[in-house]
Length: 281
Image 1: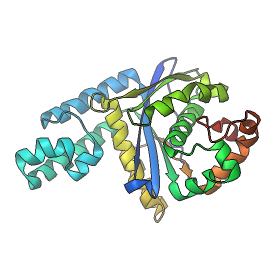
Image 2: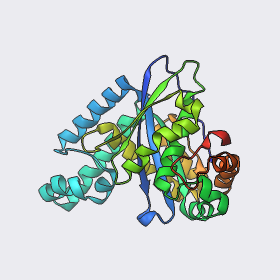
Image 3: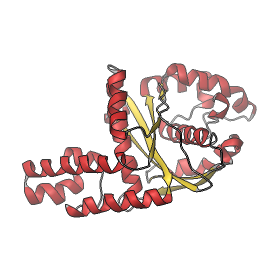
Image 4: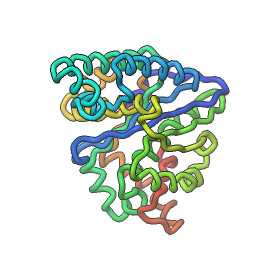
């Protein structure tokens, strides 16, 4: 599934893409990755309004899971202070207001879903073992960055995109793959800036990406049964700024593998950290 909702219009400026991932319980069905691309000035404005809304409720940071389930920061700052019923009302209002901040901004959304059973199956096949990283975390981040850079390369002006993602126990593994990834994808490398992990508690744009990633997982869960309704719901929130939404199933993965296996086999690589998806489009 893929949707192109609009055209990005930036001229000779550094862009920043903030990324986060999400999944259902124990990554059994869907693993999602999502993020927003925008100019630094736009990120500044969104961060200012976002922080102001959190501060109005005494919240130091936002995580969607904690908001929805009244855990962590929302338990400490809202439930313990106001009680469960009032905390639920406040948390819902905060979530609605933060979504509105995003909806009225010039942040451009990219989302991707990985169907986990399909990924496990294809990555265990002989050719799949050569191309696909065993860890969907690494694969999804590399694939997602490729999707963003493919879109950026369509711009009339050359753009450089800095990528920032949530700190994670696997961040080091992903970070080490960066130079090899750019070497395998030289066209993308022309537009690829820094790759940097950030603490989501200290960086609002990562929190914004977390909101999108959580929503993406819910969308793909619904998409399996009601695809049109799922996409319509996401479009309704993002109001035209939803750029691309690829769905990574077995058919897509086998096409990806077929387009890259000989190139990677020639290098003697197997199940490595580099996923050269560029040749598959």
